[in-house]
Image 1 (cartoon, one colour):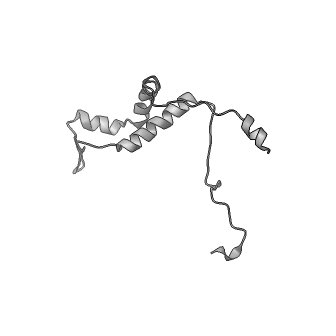
Image 2 (cartoon, helix red, strand yellow; image 1 turned 180 degrees about the horizontal axis):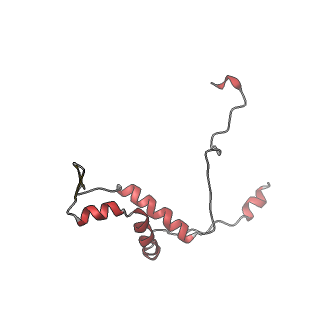
Image 3 (spheres, one colour; image 1 turned 60 degrees about the vertical axis):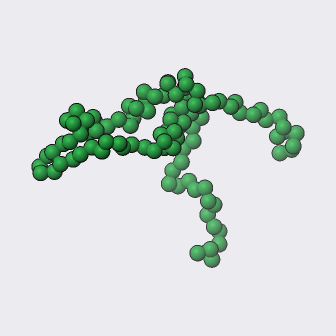
Length: 105
């Protein structure tokens, strides 16, 4: 590929995924996926559930740290803004090339 052809490639469109309209559009979907029926039942019962001699107490504060919440929000926002751009990875794909030498162990 020549330098001239590299210069002709258009830059990808930059989008601020943290815009309020985008975050509002994905908030319901994120909450739906990360809500738990068990947690909801525990909250309805004052944070405690007892069955068969086992008592379960719901912590007052729990959930994801801010960084994880932000990453989840951004991932959902990216899917909303770029619905056709998909990358899939599997156990067979590798980011580290396999060594051709048997002495690499």
